[in-house]
Length: 289
Image (tube, rainbow, N blue to C red):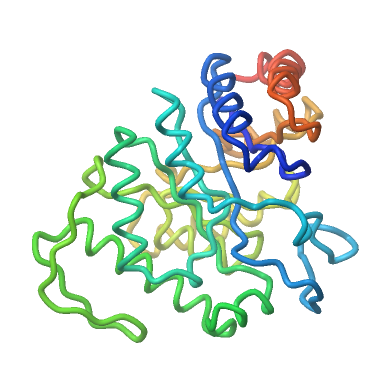
């Protein structure tokens, strides 16, 4: 079982070089496979959108919490580590210009030696999309087209694209990602729509906020969609939040989950990170295949 780690965003430390470098180096030394960071460009002071992962519909993070740009943060961490894989969980893809994003991702992947993992989602916060001038209602269609745009740029000697939102003709984009298929793309989301998208175009699937009972039908949807698309369902890597309960973790393993994500302690210290990793390894991970 692979272990992924998310930094704490409950302390200002996440935006400091000491915490970012220290967390990453401790994680790498303790055998953590990957580190994952979220994205919010802005957080509206007031919003009506319902946060889907908390009963009260409010995101735990506020505009007062530092939320560094995930790609810039990962580029810094890449320079302080050698093996740790570098993931976004989740980058809000429709909020980005995909031609520019493809270049940024390929650059980080090339400089890190092929360690980047791109987790993407459509976003839930309408007010954030509006602040960026991006249509919230078109976010699903934009997400799928933008994935196609980036893969076209990464795989073509001379790339052309004619889509609903993006058009270009006979362009070159270098450097390329280290892997022939480009940066692996993990589809985030907890809905059947997200599961179908993962089946059609994802290298991985991260169903946020679900337990093993809720995960099983989503994976069935994902695998059926993959088969319809002529893809191998078992090639799609599944990751979830790491439960504290060992029996629940075993149920996730039985469903095909191969990576568990845990959060660092909220005290914003590197020693707290070390303790959080060690406890999870001792209580859960050491008992899993």
